[in-house]
Length: 329
Image 1 (cartoon, rainbow, N blue to C red):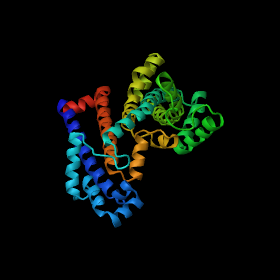
Image 2 (image 1 turned 90 degrees about the vertical axis):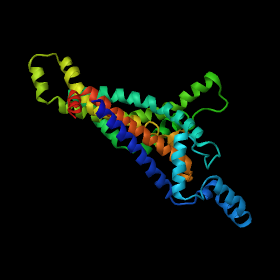
Image 3 (image 1 turned 30 degrees about the vertical axis):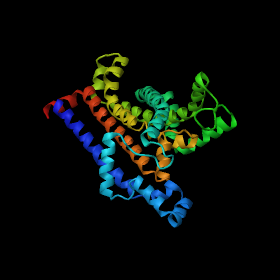
């Protein structure tokens, strides 16, 4: 069993290495010269005509004159030493920019991940255990519609309704200017409520549909009918047999969502002007900020792979059949 676990860990890190290589290639084949985005188009052509030496020094400073292979090995070294260079857009260390953005994104994503996981599981179990009842007839169409609405449309609709018309929430930003101490904390909470509500609605809708489907299928299995016919109380059948088996696909999805905590809120962040990881990644791609884009892609890939690894470990712990298969291997 330990051998199989170490094998999964090895595969996970090999996957991360492959993604690192692919992300490096993709970023460098994007159209546009990064030095133009670094100094601006007008400044670039001015320096090209009047002061090409300064332009060449800037190209050398950022390593843009090296071959792709040299840049690749520098990139691998930078990952090991946590030296990701300077951002092309604000001339600040890339690692510092990304860490600040991650903290703001986690402020939205962690509550969303926990709340939607709980709501989706509870509501999905109720609807799946009693299909066709009033609760199922009301909740399933609602979540089905929410699950099909594009996220940017719902963001704009709720922004217009609750922020612009009703003025219950700020239209955009993360904190009101001039706030310090407790007032600043309360201002941040006020700004983050509407984005969190939107993200929870979306995540809960997909989690609800998954859990309801799993419970609906499992309740028809023969061992559930056998347990019910033996006179075992309904709640005991639900919690001991149905939910334990339904949690396998649900926990896989739940752990995979953890991998998208840092990059999964891009649309919401862009719409609400929340300067988190998603918005940073969006701006980095738009501005051809190669160092920032590479680090964003790397962190996102690492989170996805690690969350998948955690999901495998949890499934082995929950499902005794997987324990047996692992032991036999």
